[in-house]
Length: 305
Image 1 (cartoon, one colour):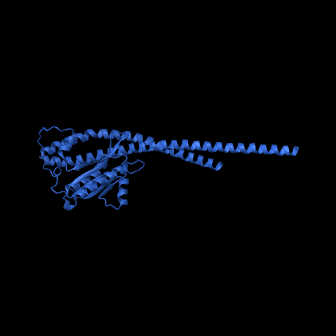
Image 2 (cartoon, rainbow, N blue to C red; image 1 turned 45 degrees about the vertical axis):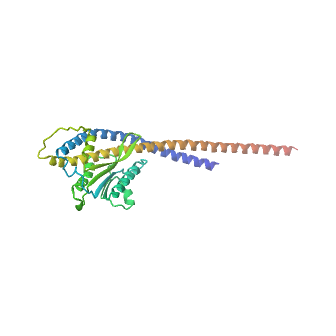
Image 3 (cartoon, rainbow, N blue to C red; image 1 turned 180 degrees about the vertical axis):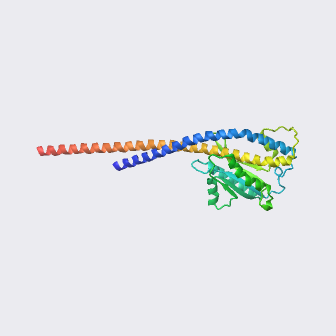
């Protein structure tokens, strides 16, 4: 019985140490998600105004720009997947990867060749393990992304969309990331960045009016659109990176809180078992003492006779 009690004590000590770690990780994630939320909120006005500008310029270009006009027969598409560099975030990465896999299958069923771009070590490891070819990868900044990271990611994607498919270019650009809805809810979503759908862009920007102001552009609307579209793509990628970062920290906080609660329940259960084992040990010791005393009494009684 003493050996069993020692086992319970070792397990309680081990689980207690683990609980301290998960509690610390929960607190760190909670502080980081607040910072990530603030970054998302601060980037929204810029993204909104830039989207309105793109809508105005695209309207002035009479929807004839190459990046706002869909190909007659699209044959190649690019998919950008945003995951995290680290795990311990519940189903955060797996949900984003599943959404990307569904999108890839859908595009391939339409007869399109898909180039896969991945951000985050978890997503990279997923495709490498399955020996899937990746067009480009980025990692090391998913916890705290910057606009420079978004520009670095956007450069090859913009270059690919501007090329002809015969030269390795793509007709469409899609992005899969996790949208931060609330501390308890994060949703993996897919969006098409290019070619632009003016109605969808206007809806995102909040400019759904059928009557829009007329502008004169110098040197031309097409040249202005050439300059604005890279900024638009970069801002969308940056916002998606921030959304994904906030979602990851929220998922980590939730996962670590669950682990901490489970550790507390396990400690309570192990403590009860240890107490029961200790009580059984004490009871056995008392029984042995009482039995010994009774045996001595019987032996003394026999000797008196």
